[in-house]
Image (cartoon, rainbow over all chains, first blue to last red; front, side):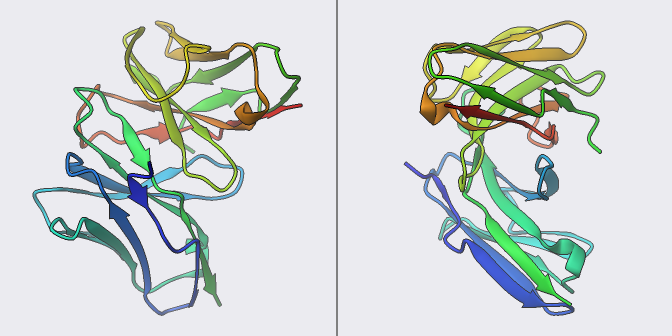
Length: 114
Length: 115
């Protein structure tokens, strides 16, 4: 049962343009959402997060949007840079009875073309 | 650089053997979580330790067990290895048990191959 879904396994974007990565979830108990970036041979690195009480959170070039009614979130990267090329994981937590269980999606590989 | 280290980086075992993977958390981080990442998948939560006690577990059988030590190190033990246990094993440390705003810091992982 895949509770966090990233339906696009890969995405190619020209440098300077916007990258939009999408994520859907099914568990209505999730109340905190995160995006992680992963380079080869490294562990995932936290990028940005959003609480379910918000619908937008911005950090520099990265913005995460949350649509609770649609159980959908997206990550916008503007402008995209070649160094952003990595695998991006959407993740969610909540409803796990007091411990920090994070459920990850399968990832989207972003390639930013110079 | 997250300050979280894991050893070994790679490991090859045969079916039925036992394996111990090690993680050294950031100093002061009292929570460590372990994840299994199969090829082409996202990390799957195995369990979490808080102050040396397991306080949460994912859908993994009891042959997956762990230990957390006072010096911010921890272990993941897997008994009776199966071919499907081949994966990247990640540990992640954080400051708090359930502070949603607390970031988990991941190590680079141990890649286990079971033949």
